[in-house]
Length: 351
Image 1 (cartoon, rainbow, N blue to C red):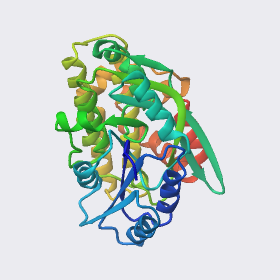
Image 2: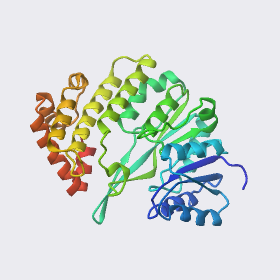
Image 3: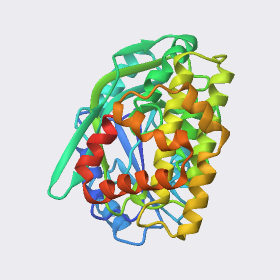
Image 4: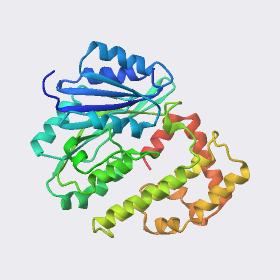
């Protein structure tokens, strides 16, 4: 098998229609010095069997079968046995272009980076079509923690520092820092915060190889979440804590933090007005009222600078703290989201 340079870690759970394409995209990499650790997290369909079939054909593929514990426990189980110099985390319902591992590895070695961040594509599926949006910022190598921290807000703003699948991590750094994925909803964000907290050298590229598939009807992100609002509040606190630890207390980073807070508040209200929401009408009004009267909202409205006219318009009911008008506006948003995925994706991209 030769030396293992990159350990590809992939949690697998109830994705029998998609996991084959994900594995094929790893097998199709021009870079060959990898191992794939596919973690069957107690899947209830044929996903684990499909992984076993691929493992029987290629010795670089290893399948871990375990009881269901969620994506964090699956990733952590693979970290314990990974043998690569670098780790790459892939979702089992997405896919990667053939040059991804070679491109990221070459940049990591050339720049001696502890972290490589690349661009990616959001592929929104609707009916029989697909809308593809490229997410990237620039090509840059940060040779010190200070230089990266000053510019990190630009990458947060383009959703490039939240997810694990557009990054190449040093395995020795993960182990030295004792980093693991926490057992929580959306575990990738706190893991990344922990990783970048003390990182010294970061390389960023506009090259995009990963395809994140959005708007799958049965995906985790499509479901109603009863605790989304509380989770977003927690994430907001993590961001503030990170920047204060970095010694950054103002400037463009904080405008970004509060703008994203208010944008995600709109999403939290839309979660409540979703057709899949199980709350009663009275409970929905109470939830929206609670959000509108959070002191963080006033701070965010004061500090955020919305970038589009329709985003400014969407904030009017929130500024007025008008529950019924906020509900009405959100009901329109959720209707578009549930009935015209293509239009919703375009509006979200242009906000």
